[in-house]
Image (cartoon, rainbow, N blue to C red):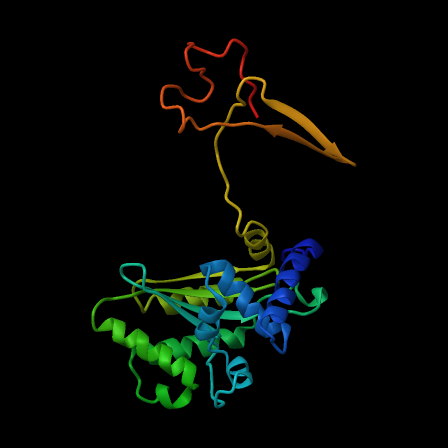
Length: 256
């Protein structure tokens, strides 16, 4: 089993606390949905609220009580062809000493039963789930009238592990009954990594300073190198590192 990390736990916790405050949520567990859905799909808060089917969350929002059958959220990505239906099961541990663990197996039982009834279009399903999940199930079945959607089952948690090997094997065998169906685990380390880089644009490339147009600046123990760069867009007759009217800069450009 993977060891828990206070750094990874803290990264996730900070985002959870912020989401709880921003959306006036009554618990960190409810705020965790915002962190997961926001980081995985870049959804806005109103879209996240609409995607959540967890019964505890929905009742707190004023809905009638019902059953969520282990499906905490459903996001249907209609921008893809065919559309992708994302089912999410989320678990959040408030204390770090509870995070070195696997997903509970009883959650898998509920999920597989739900999927079996959904794919069989069992009429009893609509009477056994809450209003939010019922609406999502209707949307999914409507898509089948036009295409065969892809499906992804997500297990997201701030714990260190996904399912046990035995439970994962059981999941694999159960999903073989359906086409276009896969699953993903988002655990403490992978989720923290995704959150740490969220909103950052990674650039793989090199650039060169223009001639000697650079200088160093410092403030306290912080030092910075200020560099003037050009992409050549305003100087169509030369490329980066070249000088108008000459073949090359007289001095070697300095890589940054």
